Image (cartoon, rainbow, N blue to C red; front, side, top):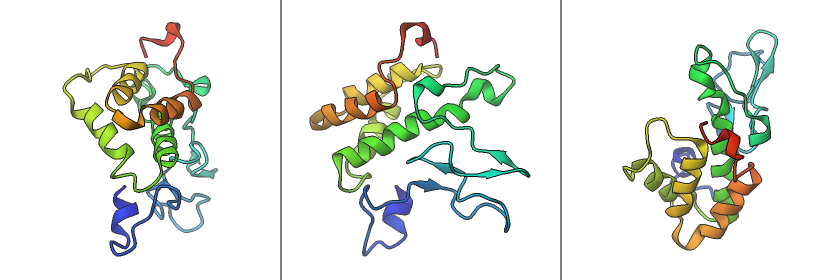
Amino acid sequence: MIKQWGNDPANPQTAELSDWLIGEGIWAKGVNGRALRDMKAPGTAYNDERVGSDRQPGHWKNFQKLPLSEDKGGVHINSGIPNHAFYLASTLIGGYSWQTAGPIWYKALTSGKLRQNASFKEFAELTILNADDHEDKIKEAWKRVGYPFGEARDEL
């Protein structure tokens, strides 16, 4: 959202016009990578034999259940799922993400209801709870990334 607003405050980007890349330009010259993360297309930000490939899933069906010793159980790798849900919510609502989906995610994160070890499902439900007039769009965004998540995965 900062990039969408801050690159040119006189002409901020709408959610639809943003490239949704995080860490664009981070890779050394010659590395096959656009960015560190791609919220629009998780798993496509980089692919290079020297650094590996972007393993982020964008849908729950590709969730990577990892041991705690690897990426704390996959918290960074699997963050592509809620990142993609945010991208989808922002573009479904339209306009400027910092005025639409951004405050919804922020309220969910700061409501005091989000447990430190919350599941993806719990976080999704908090965003829906805080969606106000955009509840249908937030639900649709989560649906597109695999919500509601299966009961067997409630602990994740």
